[in-house]
Length: 381
Image (cartoon, rainbow, N blue to C red):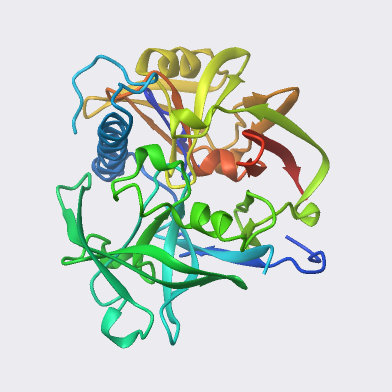
């Protein structure tokens, strides 16, 4: 039996927690359970996922130019396709392609499941997910927003601010975009929105409507501008905010600097010994790289057969094999294990960098330190 290799040409696709310190809170993350392995017949579905990612980054680069007046340094010249601490459990949704957790907006609180995304900045929800008329603390900013998604759907609507809480942390006047149309597909249930954790320079919202974590920092709701993703293939995934949960990792933390002016979390790394520049993106279900670089990687891995499937380059391996793909940050190596490898493809990316999505996050506990402009990587406990 052959398994599609979670790596891709231009896309390294991946179908690829314990006692809390006093005063800490965690947001559980969860996903819908997988209904089976990928097959070579699912190329069309995979292509749709890739297109979504291209549109996402094209929009982010447009936002960066609008907010800063300059082209993003990672953008290629190719034509584009346009309390103190808290933790939240994450839910596995859509066959492992999405991780969601709970937030609350309004007074009284309205609970919403959302996708926490380090590759975007705004909080947007489907109509009906949030009712401003039922909240005594809701404020209509009279500002509108517009986003486009990879399947052609647009999210247009109005920006409100309201009381907000997440895993025991509370804030006021946090921005939420209420869409007029369903831009989150029903297959992603219970997810009803996206909440960005990147820098404000790539946000669609006006500058006064900052990403929710920046608002919590500004209001002193967290003592440290740090959050930590620990995504597991099974249960126990979480997003920890306001500090570092040492129970989620073992050994030491390796730190790598990032430049906040980039908008994204950009860090230098290597993959199977080749130096690359990466974007850490919890909202992407794949690992994606420039086509030539990914093709070279696939061809260099023992046990991987590279072929053309419906015009897309695929890497496949026997289920009895264990292809070796190692990602290294600082001095620490994180192998992508057999269950993280699933499929590959090629596409024109709008950037000169690799996107490290969920398959990598399932291999490490990743810490985002906005106070010191650094990223931490540690082995999961």
